[in-house]
Image 1 (cartoon, each protein chain N blue to C red):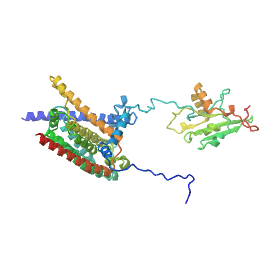
Image 2 (tube, chains in turn red, brown):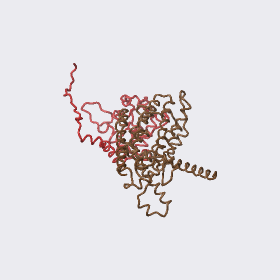
Image 3 (tube, rainbow over the protein chains, first blue to last red):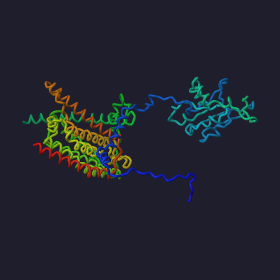
Image 4 (cartoon, one colour):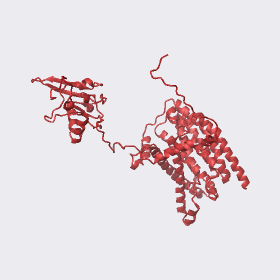
Length: 200
Length: 339
């Protein structure tokens, strides 16, 4: 017989005695259980409903909410922070990120296309965690349902536009620093560990 | 003579039109009231979108149902399928004709009003059974079968529960029953006839297929029960019949136990001059009591789960019928001793 790792005593659940008593009879006749149930529903009739009237009454997502994706812009050049390392695409469990890069005449790696299929995304935010430069982030914006597949297929331009739309204000930058802050800024590896180029 | 007959006919038709249209409006708002009540009991809001606080939701639903496709299953028994909802709606609407809304007003002030109501509520069961049979679907059929068994069982206890009232009022005319309550010391028959009232309320819930006795339309087991195959306006007719049935049963409870249109005595002495004003007050009083009964229906619906089938049957036959017979015995004995 297979032995269980955690042994426990068999639990004996004893039901209350079904003996006849005058009290139980009275309880049955005057339906006390049902009346207490009715009392509960009546009391909740006068409590405040918990419903949020969604389209009229919007709730702002909490900080750290995994909403629509965006590609971060470099503050100095205004271009995407993404260097095309492909870590996000590698870790993505639903394989929804595709990155196309090429080498230009100066032997720099140029991110040609950065495509993200939101319809396949599972919103795990592994890509955000994997990114060494904080180039991809998830915004607090969540109302982007659409009838067309094209609208939910994100290209590099669209993702950069998402950054402009939802991450350019101050509040969003705080949120970005606190939750999806780029690892490059405060990453301290152990001695002798390979470091990213601009990590001092 | 002919002129007088014609005049009576026209008056009756006007009365019918007024009562039916008002009853339809009441159904619309009873549905709204139900959805709001149950919503708030479950800490929700209920309908909120159509009109202020969703007050026009029922009208939107009716318009939607009216324009929906009228589907008839290919293997259905077509004549019965067509006629079943009509029987249902006719039986419940005809019941409204004997209900006195204020002193002396009923479309048909007949002497056997209470018996007529019983007959019509039993006839309503035909609609359910025929709909279940004609749909040629197992869910509908099971719903219809359950309904027939349930209605037959609870008809008995409902009839017996009102015998006490008949003995006390010495009449079957609903207007006379209310008038008799006005002359009774407690002014309401619920106080001496409390057992009868409880039995009546339980039987009325079973008779109108409401929770906790909604076995004919048990969603979890039977999709929607006997009207599974109905859609569009035919479905709406069943829906209407169910709610008018509730209104009729509530008004019977009001008339027979809660004093009907009867106002407290001092109001009659204050406004003895204007009979119209008193009639208006009586209608308001009647409707207030009616909606308290309707509220009780909704309250129970949001509280209790459904009875099991054998529990339903044993409650009807083993408890309610003996209790109501006992009630008749006591009422009759006291009545004999008093006289």
